[in-house]
Image (cartoon, rainbow, N blue to C red; front, side, top):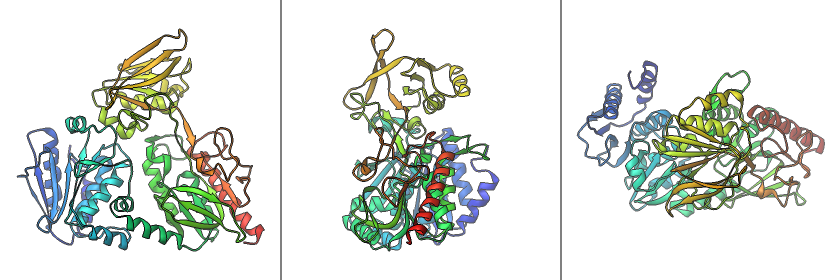
Length: 520
């Protein structure tokens, strides 16, 4: 089977017409299957444009790998492994950007990248199933394409497991700078540059603070926030969205089969479609911004939102749609070994545990789905459930029990995460029926025990329940006039995508109604 199908090949050929200067693809290969696939991929790319040439005399320490270079090596990007799956878009953009096509980023930010002085060699470990990895890979590739002092190597952790073990990489994306830890998790270009140059962060915060007040400011870019913004923007009022990562939990969700009228989709795909829909309207999207404080109006009728960057935004009304995050177990060793064997995203980090023994904690839909997915990658999965019965849908349970490399432990309480100081080595649990304690030797533990609302920063401003959920009435209004809320962060039952969208739409309409009635 060809690495690229005919449709993809034609699309790639169209993209390559945007190359402004010649580029070279230099591969380091052996006789393995992956090298054969890489050779075919690079030969195909080279055949699509007279500005691309492919060579196979590379001397990289990683095999298979290839470099994309231009301008006598002043622009240099390397992929160790085949950039397919979620990373195929990273490959296309790397070809274009090294080839002189301008990135779609803020001009001032790109100038800051060009002005960075020093020597920066970045390495990013990714997995092909990770939804957050492309953001980091693409940002660093842009930097390498623009600045001759910067180079970047993107490494498929599943393909280079010996290096993963040696360098103690336990989660993706993990980024190293000149051989030292630089960052873990999703980062965009602005965040990376800010870590290297504090002035960039200060300028960005000043720019945000200078924005005119919004009629509606939505906090959170998941399904609820997107729906709210679409509804308010369609009313013709000034709307903005502040989010840590547009898409929210969708970016960590693989298969979606209960989104009405869409038989099956994937979280990242739906998140991209939501963002595209929002951008059809005049909505100011401020991504990768973390809200830390909400201040009620003080005479001027404007709510003030303080961001972690130091910026302050003003708005007549606020819609809180901050969503939720994975709940922690709360046992000794969990924090110590987070990203060192304790993980919360099986789709992202699962490939790092190929051929190893792992546990999944949680017997709901997310836990059972994780166990099923991991069973196709790892050597063995132990599913641990506190209750006497699994809570997942029957169809999922049926699939789970059919798998030969999965064991299920019920009425079991995890009491401690075990490790050797560097990484997880196992798990200790108590049999709730007998009270006896047992240890399991493990390489990784995936926690899937539900969600916690992202609402801690609102404690002094908004009424919350004992579980931290934002208390709202039937219209989505909070106890603070002009502030509404929707989605998984609220008391609304059934934390589902379609429910969040409905609640977000309702909150948007309620905010508009509030503005009309209050004379704003």
